[in-house]
Amino acid sequence: MTIGKIIDGKGFAAALRAQVAEGVAAFAEKTGRKPGLAVVLVGEDPASSVYVRNKGKMTLAAGMESFEFKLPATIGEEELLDLIEELNADERIDGILCQLPLPKHIDEASVIAAISPDKDVDGFHVVNAGRLATGQEALVPCTPLGCIMLLKDELGELGGLEAVVVGRSNIVGKPMAQLLLAENCTVTIAHSRTRDIASVVHRADIVVAAVGRAEMVKGEWIKPGATVIDVGINRVVDTEDGKSRIVGDVATAEALAHVRAITPVPGGVGPMTIAVLLRNTLVAAHARAGLPRPEGL
Ligand SMILES: Nc1nc(=O)c2c([nH]1)NC[C@@H]1CN(c3ccc(C(=O)N[C@@H](CCC(=O)O)C(=O)O)cc3)C=[N+]21
Image (cartoon, rainbow, N blue to C red; front, side):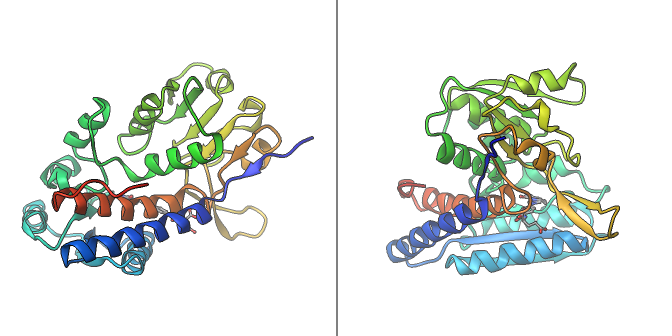
């Protein structure tokens, strides 16, 4: 039995960050300032804290300015909205990311709506979602854009291919479907109410799994030769050694016998998300400075 290729998302992300760093240097040369990214973290979730720290490090490594705001979980919505207003008005800041999920007493939609669309490097604002859906220039959500970059690198032209996105979230599934459509794929979104999901997935040349359920997509669902992008990051406890590890939404070991190529977890889509965040911040900085989009990004 042949075995598929494992896509090196980690390596691709490192190359993208290096490319962003070059663009940052050129931007600083032209404008006399560095692009700036503000990350807002509400509450103490340890996994989120680690992730925010990594983002801060990589932001600095790319030559940008990093602004971190750690707020207590008890902060009121008004106070958070006031901070976002300050960040919107701060000329040093090109990108604002408010880490989700937020505590239950804060309305996420209101917080996202408060971020200036021009600084919305997550691409979560309805203005950016609408621009993406209507084919206008937009800030595009980092994870789906990273997935498209990996797919184009692996497959070249995507036009005419059958793509199935499993999951319909606003942050991954829906924008992923829009991006695949913009690449002229035939796009299906499957979800928890889809009937016979196995046979829907089996049609696909491209499968993007973004449901947040550990190893839910089985190997035999995959059409031979399909390319699989696994967006899931699920922490599971190993029944054998009791240690926790991270697995994707795809049963990778099974799928490997069927795929042309597949992203691993970890080391696949996750690192791309952060690299694209830096890319989006550089793109936002150019737009805010009235400069054309940096080439090749
Ligand atoms: N407004 C907002 N924007 C986000 O983009 C956002 C968010 N909120 N909330 C949390 C999720 C999670 N997220 C990850 C990004 C990279 C990795 C990553 O780099 N993972 C590595 C390491 C995994 C590990 O070992 O923990 C990997 O997959 O190889 C993981 C998770 C962005 N998020």
